[in-house]
Amino acid sequence: MSKFNQYLEATKYQRGPLGGRMYDFPYHVNPECRKCKHLERMTEEDNSLNYYLQHMTKQREEAKAHPLLGVKKKWVVIDLKDVDKKILELLWDMYQKTYGSQTGEKGLSLDNYKSIYELKEKYKLCWLVDVDADPEPDAFIIYKDTANDNKKISLIGSDRSAVGKRALLDKLYELLKTKGWYLEASVKLEEICRTKGFNYVDNEEHVKSLIGHKAKGMKWLGDGYYMRDLTNSNIQIKKRIYGLPN
Image (cartoon, rainbow, N blue to C red; front, side, top):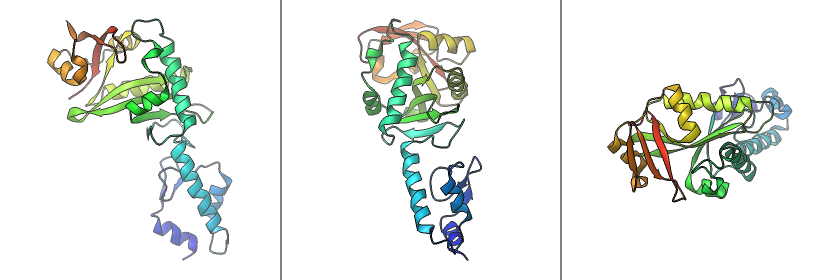
């Protein structure tokens, strides 16, 4: 057995989800990379094995910092503490484009969060997707695990391109029809959810259990609507919970 085949055997070689070859690395090999292609063709006579394995290790580290490397049209889950400054800046840019378009609407000022690092401290998990020609993310969904095996969608955003917005809305529609997923919606997002006919929580006690300490000072309006203080603000805003929370 050649050194290369021994390596594949030792690392439980398998084929990746997009056709790229997988080794022991948690991402598929970049199909456009000449060195990656060469790694697949190596035999025992090739004395460059160690060099190429070092190359693959380097790509693994790059993939950790840039989770969308080589991935197109597929949502990738990341931990915000693992991504580098560039990805965080891109996330912040999309956040500003999404919520900044509503600056001036009651309770949706960008002053709610001062920087991406404030978001990074508060939230852990994020979904990213790249749907166009460039390698940068075009949409994101930040969510967190909550009680009773629920997952709360906390923030969403896109680069405001048509494909980015479409990818975001398609994923949002999918999640809100999935058991255990929900979001608090207000202003434009509430209008979208209402128009689409998504399920909403019309029980005051259930709503209070979902929003936890934020229920302090909450005013129930009926039909699923309530008023509560906005995060990082004393301003009250009208909200409604959509989705299928437990």
